[in-house]
Length: 125
Image (cartoon, rainbow, N blue to C red):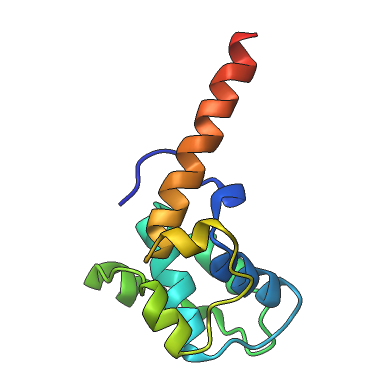
């Protein structure tokens, strides 16, 4: 698990895209739902926060969603790597950083550390 507050601006394009689709009312395939859920759990988002994100899905069922998210949480799954994301068609909007990493969690760590460093510089000025 990645320490500290969840920083949505550091999400990799694949996860940001999946969340945007959910918020727009789209149904995600199971593989994308699992990827988003496991990623969000891996970066420290709580179960209720994840359930809230899935609330925009047209087939949203809070009981079923809570069960699935809690199951993934209790099983300590790691989010799928980039190769798996590509295999299932869940790689969306790859950018320059994507070409240098092999896992969405690595993308997030790099972007979050960069964001924190920039925030530190801003707050010291």
